[in-house]
Amino acid sequence: MSLYVIDDHPLVRQAIGMLLRRIHPASKVVELDRYSELQAALIKNGEPELFVLDLLLPGIKGASAISEIKGMYPNTPLVVFSAMPAGEAKEACLEAGADLYIEKTSSSNDISSAIQGLLQVDEEGDEEALPSPTGDTKLSKRQKQLILMLDRGLSNRDIAAELNISEHTVKVHLWRLFRRLGVKSRTQTLHFARSRGLLMS
Image (tube, rainbow, N blue to C red; front, top):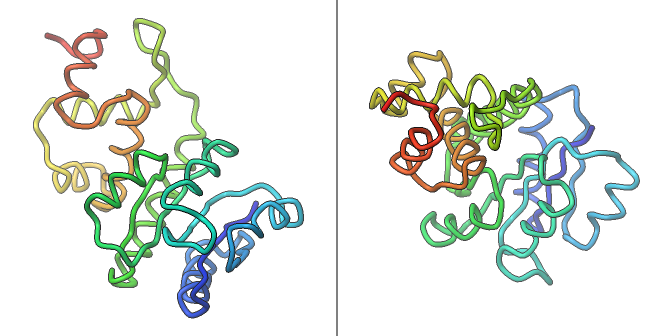
């Protein structure tokens, strides 16, 4: 399994590569400066465990690279690491399938915590998903736990404290839950859960 970093700025690419080697030493880190090199790199270095890519890559428009990668590897976590401020860019990336959007101005501790949280969530995702009472939506134990916490009105900080995880990890859990349910907010999540019998009315 390999971790792929795609960024045309050598210093940024090397810095992210070093960070990934530190937080996930068991995996091979593959650094690429162009998106067009990815297919050959995948053949050479094996199945991806994580993608980290710049939003503004040469020869690629906007979030199209995200859509292409997620089309090939829908279950592999993907992080966008961008110089563009969060806002519309972040929304477009998450809509295209990205699991996390990190601004390049973020501190190294925040970046490390966010990526660690994402990899932790992905490993937890390997557990068998539980079918809902309606049989049409599969949720992991952690996702069902999150829904109950949202119903209690807990904030991200409260959830993090109760589960003994970082707030970054909570955000990743919530993004994945929203995507699994096809919703975009806590309110929509609770409405979905009640309508499917996942919560008492």
